[in-house]
Length: 148
Image 1 (cartoon, rainbow, N blue to C red):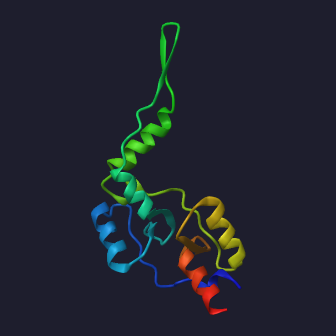
Image 2: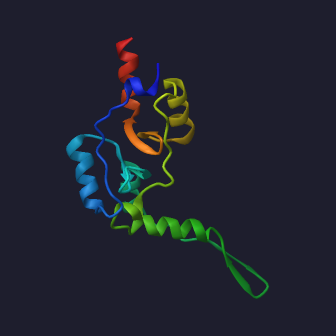
């Protein structure tokens, strides 16, 4: 079975400038786990999931420092900057996971399941020729298992 056989083609998307509050409401209103962030030509530039929004309520982990001779060196500075950006973010561009992990419509469902498990992603945008054509989630795989 192929991804195109189980994907949803009616995909709710957001733009990079969409406010976080609006994205949260979209997820709740549509009972979905995440949305692709797309540019003006329907190219997927990122994904926002419930986990990305939950991160906004997480506590910032202050980096540890080490002192060598007269110098103080922060550890994990890049990770802290990224974490801070996502916690205080106000728009999709601020909080999205990027680059987006995507799959082709002709990939197998086995490949999809492996991708979801190994990369810890859900949902996964389906992209063909650089354009969003659908979306798949763990629920789609569970529905497939229930129907066989």
